[in-house]
Image (tube, rainbow, N blue to C red; front, side):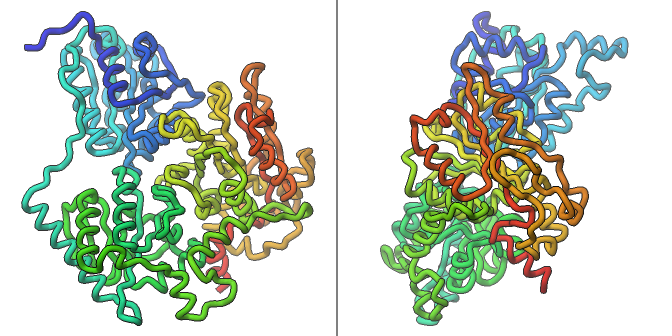
Amino acid sequence: MTALSPECTVARYLAGRLAELGITHLFGVPGNHLGPFLTTLRAEGDVEWVGTPTEGGAGQAADAYARVHGIGAAAVTYSVGAFNLLNACGGAYVEHIPLVAINACPPYEQWQNYRALGLLTSHMSPRRESNLDVYRQVTVDAQVISNPGLAPGQIDAALTACLSERRPVYLEVMEDLWDEPCAVAEAPLLRRERPFSTRNQTMLDNAVDAILTLIDDHPGPDGRPRPIVWAGEEIDRFRLGDQLTDLTDATGVPFCTTVGAKAVVDEELRQFHGVYNGPASHPDVHWIFKDWATCRIGLGAWSTSKNLGGDQSVGTDWVMAAQGGVSVGTRYFPDVQLERLLPALQDALVKRFGSGGLAADYYAEAHAHHGAPGDRPASLRNHRATLHSGGSRTRSGERLTYDGVFDRINHFLGQETQTDWTVVSDAAFSLIGSMNLSLPAGGFLSQISWLSIGWSVGAATGAALAPEREHARPMVFVGDGAFQETCQEISTHTRLGLRSVVFVMDNGHFYGIEQMLVHPSYYADRNSGEGNSGEGNSGEGDPGEGDEAQEADFYNVLHPWHYDRLADVFSGKKTPANGISIAHTSELDELLARLADPTDPLNDGPLLVRVRLHRHDYPRAMAYKVQEKRG
């Protein structure tokens, strides 16, 4: 029987385990039930508490921290805090993010009072397991800790599940247990992988053979194999970027990524052909991925509506290896682990086609074969050059557009700044617009499947504090409607002195993506003179006023804000924050020049940039939806 240690308490045990996992920051909103744990956390000194304005923002920060670092944590108080954190935990569950949700609940005595007398105290519900029940839906393990003797085992079980399943877990701890003695940790926490048996080896071998057969059955017109790899989200979640690089280097096979796996490896790698995102892809990427490649090999890619837009990722010319299995054409091989598939496939491809035997420039090949139009790039190198050069020259009288902003930012990131940046993109037009930025490995974060609007603002906090990216400045792209959901998280940026740059894409105070999804015909007239005047930086003449506001569906219209002025709200004498408003290309040029100058006071703290856009404007990647409606 393990003796309880007077030197170890439940609070110290949990704090120690979090530190063991390399967690340097715990995000959350305090409450009386959580106070004793936070006091211990500070005394231990290994994990720093980061209080955020909202529990949702804490969850977003912990989510992004975990995407970068491998695991993150958030702590809240019972019911009122836990239910606010639930959305972020749900997103982490869907997107395979290892997140530890800590919920401090009323003490054991109060629960006994309720059982005996029916007496409810603050934050309690008549349903004793209300918090536990909802978190069971979005976690791989959920524990209520009410006995200090059992606490170490419960904590270890949950954290081990978090590491092993790469998904959230839930720990509900009664307030009066924090300072109770418990056993000390006896062994380190370890990830418990699924065993690899002889049956698994046979299944893996059969899956690899089937992939080789599919490649053989789909040659190009010249008889040579013409596969393309589509690297996806699980390459990032399982930390398989190096294995992907090894595979493409050894075989030469061209590859694209999903939006969710953007920048999982350096996008300057010689075989990287772009981000494939269904009909919303860059037309050149769509051309070579769908029309030139004769078969597609998805590795860890998820078939979400956002990265396919209706495309089918099944059929005789598709391989999809994800969610623990591999589909090859019409065949399916269950229980094949991606981390074993990549090296096995690499060895098989090299054996069949030789080292570098699949190397190809599909842009050059397709151009030479089809005699493509003159505006098509003649090679992969030219395609990349067009992305970087598209925003290099501007004229001062031009109004800003979504495409103009992202083209210009791409040139800035590639040619004009010496600073490392982490691009954090919100849902909707911001995500579509940032899709073709050329970025180094680890330089992009997005929530591709859950798509909780406003996620990016809180996520930037976690991205900036994760040890692996703490050298990089966050660059956030967020729509005006999304920003209204979570704008208060800029307060955390300011308090911590994060030098984030938050571009609020103000398209005339309305939900542009919702309008596109419901009535894309609204965007048919991109030359309308109505709406966002964007004149100067004064903020006079709010965008979207007038007749055009009546044309958009009423439920998509937002109340107009002067987003840049919020910097004055959040800034303090020792915590500077700045805000500006831009509407023309010359103003963006001037801003980027200042961002490239480390001595400019604009870079002393977070910067809010209100980007004033025309209400009828939209990223060119969404043109297919407008054209479909016209057709």
